Amino acid sequence: MENKNINEIRFKVPYVNKLKLSKFNIIFPVGKDRNIIFNTLYNSVSLCDDELVGMLNSGKFQNIPSEILSMLISAHVLVPENLDEISLLKFRKIQLYINQKTTLDLPW
Image 1: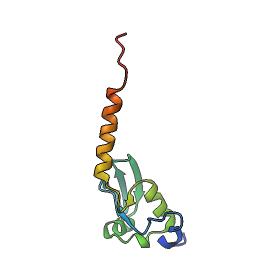
Image 2: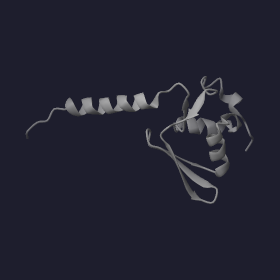
Image 3: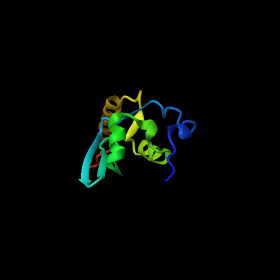
Image 4: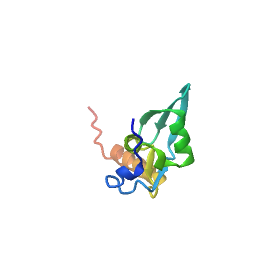
């Protein structure tokens, strides 16, 4: 696979040069050079090798090929740097509470 970099998808995703790892990622090694990244906030699962995990942990996202970078953004493994994930989680909790309280519980 040709090694395209972050510059090639900047026009598609304007914030791509300002990304961070999601706080809700859990990385599980599952074999030799195999890892699963599970994002608990979005329930997404990604399979990656040790080299990619190293790039993610070091913050060197510009070295990640554009196709893989796009997948990591779609899976919310990488999120915009200014995203407050804790506030998002609190908002989702409030939404869930409101949805449960506004449902009509009929006795029959």
